[in-house]
Length: 453
Ligand code: NDP
Image 1 (cartoon, rainbow, N blue to C red):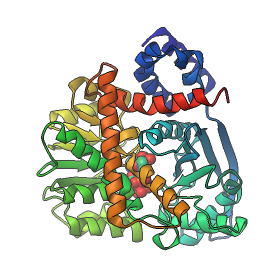
Image 2 (image 1 turned 135 degrees about the vertical axis):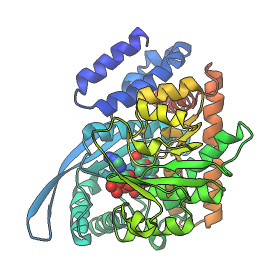
Image 3 (image 1 turned 120 degrees about the horizontal axis):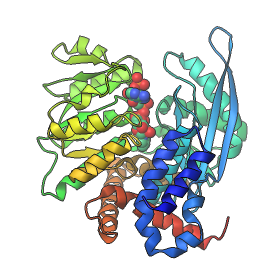
């Protein structure tokens, strides 16, 4: 690490002392950018890196709501408006008890580069709350969402900031949020993406992140003349991203061996076929149950409860070819990365955001496996959100095939940007550098064009 990056990181840590995930995300990007800053002194003189790590605006607010017993509950709401150099702020809302300012800032920061890579005009943002939808009734979730939107509505808009879903925010939550916005503002505009199909949503949006991560893996494999046909795959999570990652792997002839939730994971030697996937989708999206129930339905599968004392996640310790982390940040540490490599995994396509710790990332890069970092591999979700915005503006809907084709074109373009940029900056095959530099340049140039704002 150069002295200037060391100084920058010391500054970031001093200014944001309790935000380790934010430090992690900034450091990875800053290290990739050293060579860019050497070749482009204008980025240094305009202090682009120093400006890009500072959110344009942070909104933090109280979210009071009443539970089913009539008791008052209070959560904290956030929206990070990170960067609007190439378009309105765009990025999801996360409802999870672990949510805090640092986690949302890391996600918003990553989002800036990801959105730039999609080729679409979208800036970066992220938001959410420490509210936990698990175990809450639909009415409680509705009252929470309505209270959350009672503050958020004044900060968002179709040309200002367009949130979407993330962990804990799916179709149900987007519906309640949209309904409340419409009620307050008396207007029907595309202020959220991930909307229901009959009220402004786009076909393929629910599928887009998972499909995109698999398309990205297929692109990486094609550089070696290979495909997903017959490949054994480990998937973590069982939410939106994991479900559609599994579906697309099956479509392309691969075999999925695992799914998980925050309590434990399922290993199914026979493979999770489309009937079993339908069971998982119903379990998670309709019954809102735990993944453990899979074993009750399919007794040949093995359920392993999460053991917080273990220094590795056994899900990543099975023989396989590909891994698709699709749950949460830092779910693959160095030990997990070693286990993956020892078990034959040579393709990692990240559906979740920053799922691999820096030591794990370094190992993957050093070993030269096909490693697609989240900001490239999972950009399909926000890309189709961009397509949802385009359809809303046109007041017209594309067919499923049209959206899916555009998604595939975008994932190919992101892959090409990563490959070409990594090559141009002297690190061929390094998708981490390719994604960080490729995403950065477009935003940096726009920031220079727009002056010191
Ligand atoms: P969901 O809420 O639909 O699913 C999340 C899944 O991950 C659930 O199975 C959940 O288990 C599990 N999980 C969540 N937190 C943890 C944890 N701390 N430890 C272990 N498992 C956990 O979210 P999504 O599928 O939408 O998001 C998954 C990841 O993908 C996130 O990193 C998100 O930022 C990223 N992503 C999502 C996009 C989207 O379009 N939805 C776009 C780009 C990235 P449980 O049910 O027990 O909570």
